[in-house]
Image (spheres, rainbow, N blue to C red):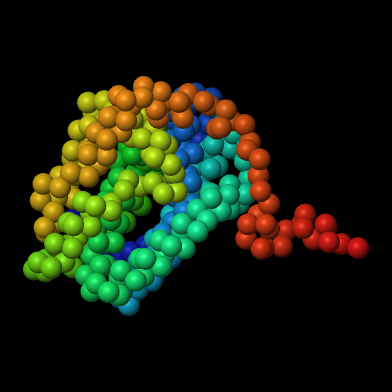
Length: 307
């Protein structure tokens, strides 16, 4: 697996949606589980700029190759969330994209600031801290494209399959960059390997955790991977990450699935109630004003203060 930053910069663009049969979205049913996953995935794709803000306060931001990649990566990820949202809208689920993004970010509150500061401090105290973030980037991208593949299999929705297959192509390129960058940092660097493994074993969480609650993360894992094929997918994912120097035999995603299954065993309603209660997906929530959350002036706010 190789990666050329120059080729990537030249070819980077928003996901090509030419020819997608948008008009047929509503003609094919989506299950409650499908809808749950799509909302989760859309919210996390739209969260990428905040994840980017964490990367840019680490030592990694001094690397011009990494910052060039991140500039393109951030733009490409924007269109993933936009198009998943478009599919949901066309299916009949109404929401204002900007309001939804603002609300998701507002729910992070003080947590995001603390996380940002701790990341910055950790990076500058530990020279090899960036190896951890590059490895996590590889895990997140591989987890994302694996999840999209599982949703294609579960849903059987032809338009969704077409869209996600195109998004997966982007995610594969992103994974290749992070994997190769992490490999370069870790190769021949015993200290970085020890820090990387120690941090992953103790602080790594599945994609979206922190933005989403534990029960929501478990619901996604159970719906997509709680079968023979899903379990094989996660074991393969762990095996691929285990090819990075110092990470042989590591179990992350398969361990997360086991933990989710254990919580469900203790409480059979756990996770599945998030999926079964479809009202959250089809009934527009009470929105807070984007202006209140971001201080951005909105037409409504302007009208309110007009004489």
